[in-house]
Image (cartoon, rainbow, N blue to C red; front, side, top):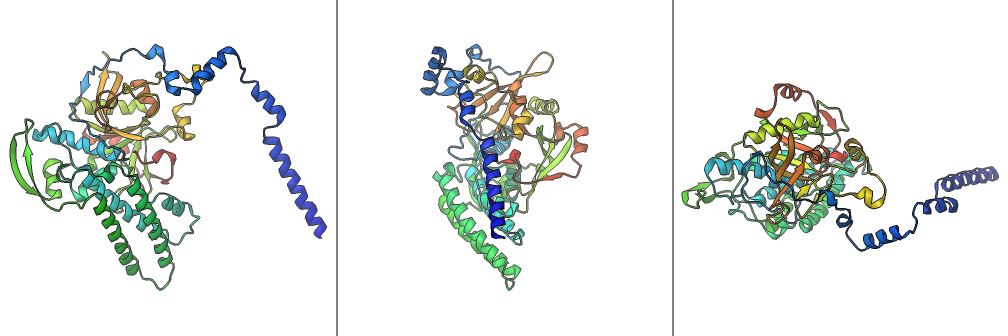
Amino acid sequence: MKKLFLLIISAFCIVGMYAQNNGGITSEMLTKIKAGYQNTPENKALRNAIVANDINKLAANADNSTAFDDHFSNKVNSKAITDQKSSGRCWMFTGMNVMRSKAIAKHNLPADFQFSQAYTFFWDQLEKSNLFLQAVLDHRAKSMEDKYVEWLFKHPIGDGGQFTGVADLVTKYGIVPKDVMPETYSSNSTSRMSNILSLKLREYGLELRKMANNKSTTEQQLQDRKTEMLQTIYRILAMTIGEPPTEFTWTQRDASGKAVSTETYTPQSFFKKYVDEDFSKYYMIMNDPTREYYKVYEIEYDRHVYDGKNWVYLNLPMEDIAPLAIASIKDSTMMYFSCDVGKFLDRDKGWLDVNNYDYASLFGTTFNMTKKERVATFASGSSHAMTLCAVDLDANGKPLKWMVENSWGSSYGHNGFLIMTNEWFNEYMFRVVVEEKYMPSKFLVLLKQKPIMLPPWDPMFAPEE
């Protein structure tokens, strides 16, 4: 019997070794692979240039290097450029810049007026901490190897996000001017604080699982302990970002800087006066070519507030999205917009064009994946949110190029803006938030569908940073 067992094991080992060698690089295969590169004078010259330089500098397309036209036929007046510094809060800056643009126009505020990003970020981090801890309790019966539990502990908290987070946070906690709660080192540079919070939340998550699996622990005891944990999180946030005000006195000034009024506000009353938006009439529109169009999708656990709303979107082809954005811009209304910003970006000019870099000629190959194929293979996805503010239309009303107000400071790109060709827009744009008044009735009807639920780890739904 023992001899038979050893023979079986040997057979498996032989089969395994054969399978491994059959798929590995053999010496014969390596000879063929090496034949793909010939050390010709031309290749040697290219190699010498590539090893010593930035690939983008060498791949820069000289045929596409002429000065681009920065005229736009339709443009929403933009004010002072914001700067998220070393943080992943683009989603917050973008959402608040949409609100800021309206507030400046409605109340004749100074161009450099901003809402406090630090104030909203404080509540974002506290709410995300509660979301994680409560989600751990919701999945208490599952093993640590379960996909949901694994995802939760991999992503306990972060500074990225999306538009529904902005909407839920300012609706729940209100909003304040930036000079009432200014930025701090940790709000501008979030990585250290985020690492500390993540470490503590993982520790707390394990503790809650252990308590929950003890049959003598009541639900009230779990909630009481969670509240104690959040006290510690609150203290860390107060020490790094500052404690949010509950009431403040603020002087409104007009565009010339002249004092108009001085009043005492709560964050909620300030929101009511200077924002007062019904975010239920804002709709996330997405171009996800890997999924069926004209359907509504919801991403599970993709929210900032446990008792808030998951990210829900209507999936449309690009030819249906552009008219919505054009209608909004023509009515002087900026939009939350996100894209794969790093692709073919000329950082010096702030110019996004699929012809900016010719990698194919530099390396003697082709790069032919479609947008659908890039998304499906994790080669592309939404990485950054900005404020869509301009479009240049031809004589037939078709878009030629677009412009966004960025949040990387006024010295970045084209005076703080990025300009993209319509071809780039179609290939690398993913999300835009459109107000109800710019939505045709045929799309509003579609939004009444029951959403198709998608898992939080789907590659298309990483938080924007």
